[in-house]
Length: 324
Image (cartoon, rainbow, N blue to C red):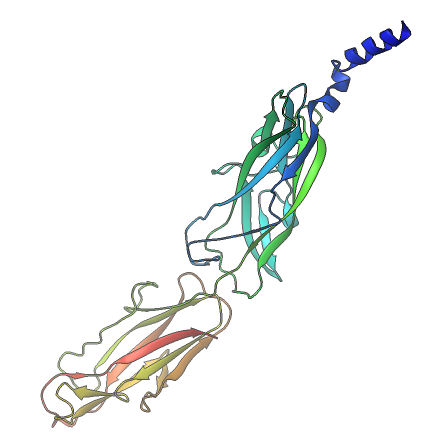
């Protein structure tokens, strides 16, 4: 009789609130959590001058064994190396890229207890089932804030201090931590070195790479110019090369041998292109703003003898920017 009585008491205990936590979920665990997640954009890595917001998706699963009652759980994400849910960061040495993770495709930041509210964690449940194993699919999202001007590096900018945590219960019912998984977010910052040739005072324009200097009717000392604008998150060098060794030649050359000399001044300093070879005229290190750095360039017609044949005189000057 005592044995029957003891058995009845055990069955009753399974229905009591004090025993509920043990009965809710059996063997909950993470499945398929990636250890490393790499940022990808349309150009490959992180382009510091691209204004696009490229939302990354991270997929994973939660599994548990069959239970006699509904199993409730939620998933949380730590702050990472920043210690701040609102401003997570990837770093490479002293350089930092701000990013964040979200529970949805909008702007709900993915957090963890005790800071998180209900919408700031990923919640799920397993119904009563006979199957041995139940699996739920989940996703969360992350992205890097666009147009952060940081140096290009050979190594990844990374946050290796992130932990994805699985809790049984809900935020409001004394949740228990039952599983965790380490995740590293990382991004390779692309090297971007761009050149724009614009009218004097105009802003950088990636599509503006040619300028026509029209002197009209040539006269000694006549001047025209434009701005050469460089933007870069890497060291850069700018070179110039004259096809006709810094003279304008007649349209009917070589039959007409007359030429018209001209001078080149870049940012107040003279440039000699008379060899016909490329000449480095600018170099820089570090990063520039998204608007770039402007260098005024001026062309001046040299002394005319007055005996030059009538006609059109031209030269082509190429301007090239490369990463150092």
